[in-house]
Length: 409
Image 1 (tube, rainbow, N blue to C red):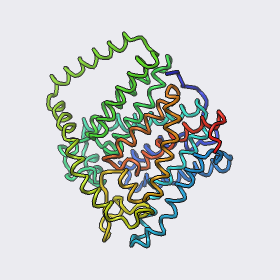
Image 2: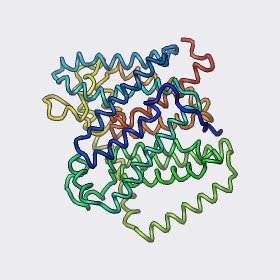
Image 3: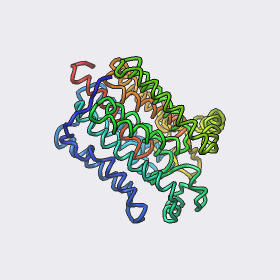
Image 4: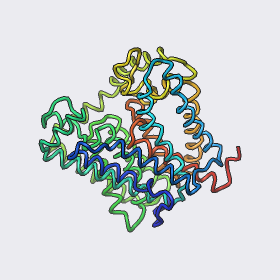
């Protein structure tokens, strides 16, 4: 695994470069000023990203994969037709469009980025993840009343008290979002660990985000974080031998010491994590009934129910089968065989290329993989803070196809 970190700035996609930092800061402000609407501003930022790509002629459709992504976008945009015919209001579509479809524009941001520019994007993403992660840890320790009220107002917790807030760490974005971006930030930290000048920053980022992933108390995030650590160690110590194996044994020793220390200081925290992890199979079993019911009641197997029909925004609508946990099944029900097949094909094209050149695209392959993994039990691909980095990773891999003159379809 080679050092990929460069010093180039993202030129021509300014909004994309700072999107995550701006969005996260708006959530922090929202904790104190309820009138601030982070979702509205994030939508404006993404519109700015799209505008800059168009103005600077960086919205490319040269590759077959580019056109496939465009087809996916258009298909979901047109799904409002059968969504309305199925008895759903247009507002459901608009809300879902903003959070899950509009961020597809970040695929073209990834396509427009050369290697060094992509690292600038990841650096800002890591910075945003650290802001919400460290802030979340501080809020968990101090637990001020204004934060308890904020968490209750946003339905992060069911009771406005400190004990309920401490069941899982939400920070300012919610535990589901926090769990994913912390794991994705662990992956994005990998190239920085390989850079001698930024190694300490990369290692601290990896460690802090690992802690945040477990404090979020999201089972999928815990499993994904553990897999990222295994993935990272396999690549640098065994696959590419980027570091001397003595560091691997030092790491194992530090992990053992940290685990023993945690057991001594708070055995309750260890058991809490254990019980959450062992309950994972039961959770999937419980949700499978919900998934089967939704699939059996699709408006059209081929076309799907339409964008947003199976999301949280359809709660309370007669005939709606809301999939509270299970992003992939939700996508299938909303997009049908046609739309979901396009999505799968996009994934296959990118992952095929990324796995063949894992040395250069280990971060992107990892982000795509953990997004899909966590989407089995969570609606990861339906949040404005989680979807952009997923599509950016897809675009970043496909950028290599254009550079190398491949993909002639």
